[in-house]
Image 1 (cartoon, rainbow over the protein chains, first blue to last red):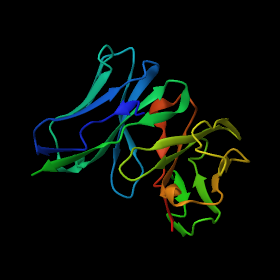
Image 2 (image 1 turned 90 degrees about the vertical axis):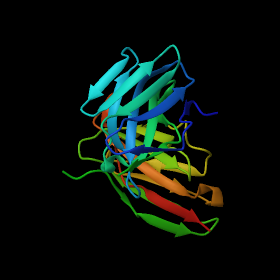
Image 3 (image 1 turned 180 degrees about the vertical axis):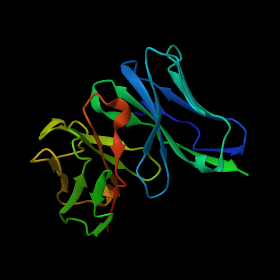
Image 4 (image 1 turned 45 degrees about the vertical axis):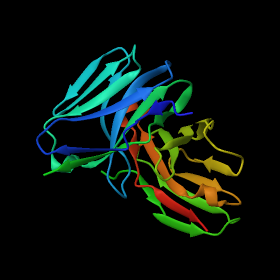
Length: 112
Length: 115
């Protein structure tokens, strides 16, 4: 069973607009959440994270929101740029495992 | 400085053969992780090393999979009697310590194809 779910396989956004990527989780023991960005033929690279004791973390154009009661987090990118086109993975830490638990990813396409 | 490197970048083998995949972590990183990414899926945790010891191998799918890290640096993932279902990209990641949640650096992966 998928403990971290990204229900949108792909998302297309116009350059300059806001991109919103969503992620849901089921394991209430997760205590840390991360977003990774992945280009083809490369490994995932860390983007931004949030502890379960916070509800928002911002870093430049990237903001992550956490709603613990809904077990939902989202990544906002504003303004979206062509270089943001990539696959974005939501990941969670905790729940009894030492490694990260990843979602299936969302392919973000920024259109000019 | 150098990032995490993995060799080979691609490996094609026949069903039933034995393969070894190598990971060179960032120098000084004590924590090392192996993940497997199948087509259309996110990375799936396999095993975690803290120093030389496998602290958590709960993600290894069966006893055909084994990993070592004898000197606390380079790690080798070993797969015996490969099956077509083992075809995937195998990713290695390292971090300075286990608690460096947002400092897990990934290598480019080894694409394994079992014919």
